[in-house]
Amino acid sequence: MACDLDCDPSKEAMVREILERIADKWTLLVIEALDRETDIRFSRLQERVGNISQKMLTKTLRQLERDGLVTRRVHPTVPPRVDYRLTPLGESLGEAVCGMWMWVEKHVEAVEDARRTFDGRSERPAA
Amino acid sequence: MACDLDCDPSKEAMVREILERIADKWTLLVIEALDRETDIRFSRLQERVGNISQKMLTKTLRQLERDGLVTRRVHPTVPPRVDYRLTPLGESLGEAVCGMWMWVEKHVEAVEDARRTFDGRSERPAA
DNA sequence: TCCAATAGTTTCCGCGCGGTAAGTATGGAA
DNA sequence: TTCCATACTTACCGCGCGGAAACTATTGGA
Image 1 (cartoon, each protein chain N blue to C red):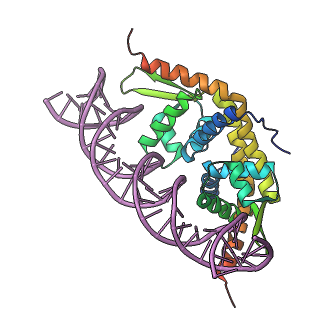
Image 2 (cartoon, helix red, strand yellow):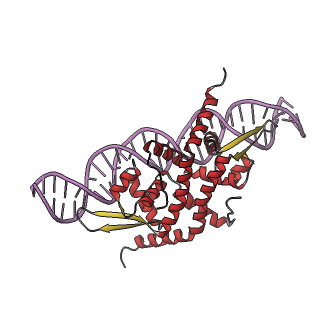
Image 3 (cartoon, chains in turn brown, red, blue, purple):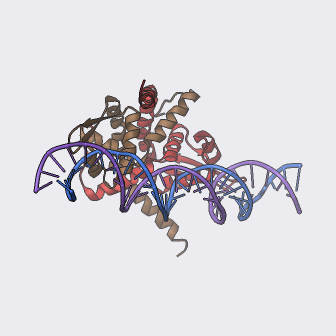
């Protein structure tokens, strides 16, 4: 009903690979941050994403750059300054990611209620 | 521009937690499969998702059930039969997930091109 | 001369993801 | 009585994710 996907098996493999690549904890948060604020510096990005280590931020950004989703610009100043922004391709992905984010925002309560109900059920085997 | 998110920090933590929970390799694929075909059995689901182990499928389904996104129905027959379907909440998430899936489908080529370019650049340090 | 800041890279290491495979329950068929 | 299928659960285990922290490069400034 909702999706109307094609059925080309060789393409599907690639779709999955890319989806798995993107559907990752840090990647989504980084895309979100880049969508909110453009031409953002490494350290600033680290603040915005929150609790991401340098290593993971670098790695995530490299992957996004490789996939053509972000642009990395180095300013040859001292101290060095590097900023990142979404490419047009990245921006279009940003919209889809926002769709998920907004879904979550809208339904946090519902999910938490469901969890309480579920956990409550299993904690009460007998009265 | 795109997202218009709120800024309640305590809510944001929950949003992140749920997002990280959903933005997971298997979870997205399972939601996709459930969105395509409703009242689907465990073994059938395993076929559709492809290459998921019993353990991970069970675990993923339990998490989705706990979050109020899928319904699990056991038919007391022999051999046992269990089917799963998205709840209305799950269906609404399914749409957002489809958004990502469709983005990927639409831009597979672009991403692969970007990768080739990126990899080509780094493999040619000098001529 | 030594320290500062930025944006990394690298090393070490623990824990948990996730695969494999064996075990469990059920009851009808052979 | 043993076997079958389904839908799990559990135990075992390796490997890689990802955190912490130290190290690097650069050059202006104290």
